[in-house]
Amino acid sequence: MVESAVLDADVVTTQTRAATEPVAGTPRPAPERPFGTVEHTRRPTRSRTVLRLLGRRILVMIPTVLLVSLGVFAVAAASPFDPLTAHLGDNYQSATQAQRGAVTQAYGLDDHWFAAWWKWWVAVFQGDLGWSSTMRQSVADVIGQGLPFTLGMSLAALLSAAAVAIALGAVIGMRRGGLLDRACTALAAILAATPPFVVSLVLVSAFAVGLGWFPTSGARRPGDDYSFDGLITHAVLPYLALTISMIPWLLLTMRSAVVDAAASDAVRGARARGVGGWTLLRGHVVPVSVLPTLALLGTRSPELIAGAAIVETVFGWPGLAEALVDSAVALDFSLLAPLAVGSVVLVLIGSALSDAAAVWIDPRIGLRA
Image (tube, rainbow, N blue to C red; front, side, top):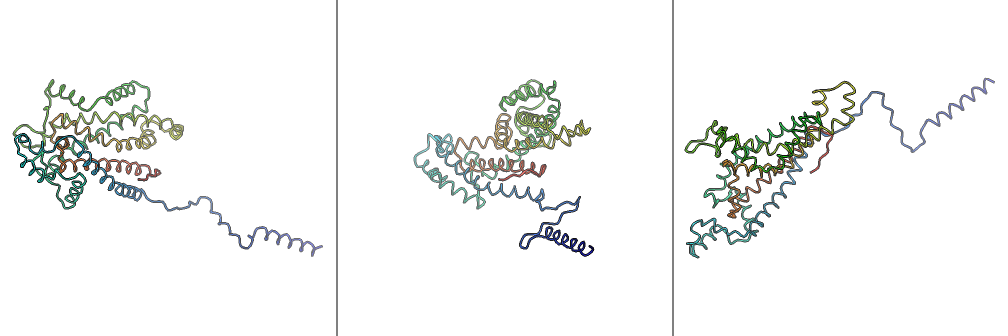
């Protein structure tokens, strides 16, 4: 009996071992991980992801800039305006055929637009932006004098509009349907349908002509040199006009994103845990809602440039707006091409930076150029 029991125990042990051991040639299962351990996976850091995104955008920017510059020369060549009119000015009617031919040859006005485009890029890579016939000075000097005024005004208005839109949009989004929400939404809808030059004229009529608080145009008094106080005083009205014209779309986008985030399951769960007030808004709603606003900042960069050109024209701000308009009318390729290409580059940089900021805020976003 004892021997039989021992034999039966050996058989059971052998069968159990055969059932648990893998068959020859089959892969062994991975050992089970103890409870509580975390599996570490290699994931790119936020900095690496942002740099990768910016690198891809730079690669896309190169052919885009080339195609845009090619289109500028092609469209300008198809224009009905005669560039000789701008080059000769008041002497156009009295100029002889020989004088017209000399001007045409000197400025290369008889070249095909593709040849002019190719010559322009060759000169740019050599560090020569050319001579502006409309401004009567080198293109580098024209851009160097007007660019600080345009960039300073545009960046200040952009940052102010974004700060106001994000803060106010978060407040009215959390208080949807209230008096402040209805008033801000109605005012934003009205301003969104109002062109920037109308806003500029209203500000001039109210604060410059009516109240006399600010000067009507320019960046300094006639005969005076540029000064910090003079620049600030003259910049108030154009700065307000450009900021007001940019706020509506950003405000409405931020409000809509806050309303959607407040109705999400994550925010409901946070409220169920007792989180509320500014803690809920700052920690759960705004980080998610600000992403659509950042995306809109990049996509509406052309509107910022167009609005800045209009505001500068109305207020006589010494930026690049006047140079851009004059060069387009006179077909001044040397000045028109860098201004147009520079505008495209600024738009592409703004779009890339807005996407990079979104990836930095929320690393879960996967963006491709």
